[in-house]
Length: 287
Image 1: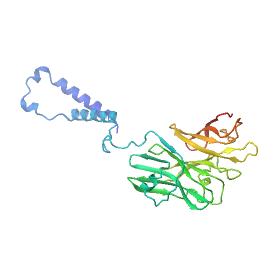
Image 2 (image 1 turned 60 degrees about the horizontal axis):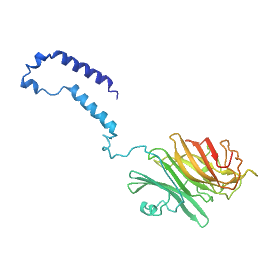
Image 3 (image 1 turned 90 degrees about the vertical axis):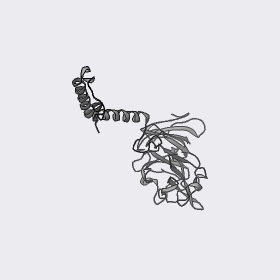
Image 4 (image 1 turned 180 degrees about the vertical axis):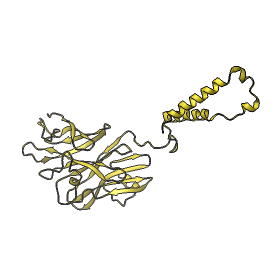
């Protein structure tokens, strides 16, 4: 609502009232006139001043005062070893395993995997609000690929990214269906080397909005090589990935860098928020 016209109108009315009441007239004010209610314009100006002060202090008048959760806070990240849990586990049980997780206010998100067979893991991600499960996703990758969730980046609002692992392409539903417009759309050639998948996720329901595979590329034969994400950060418009990359880290145009020395290489790659393009990429001892 635009309050400026109302404020201008009130200022004019108050100015007129002051002109009509001279110093001589003010001495003739009776007690009855002195008890006249405060003019509405003065009440409005007082209320407007209070609203301005509340905004300056960051008080949410509609949502319960200073204690209300800010919709978007400083982004946090958690990257580590994935832990096993199921969608039926309680928050207390999952939390006790001390895997990657983030908490804002009374909302917590955990990422990990479920051991679905003796030789296969599938990724899991779950959200709790006040200790009650809001959603859990077990359908991102359901193939024979040995996938794990092991990293999160979240600002407490709409910006949520998850990190997953992949060891090869299998028949069935996997992250390829989310990465059709990603920087890398698939695992690539070869198999066995463990690489990463970065996905932007809707925190309201767990749906994957965008995804990309993140891998190294062997300069000798072009096959996919290992890469593990070690850290995540958010610039406000892009997501920055820190990773350990084996021969060889990729340039923004997806070609293999030329590197010297032994691997892994400390690799930094900055993605556009929709994960379709790489803004910049660099690696120690590589060009």
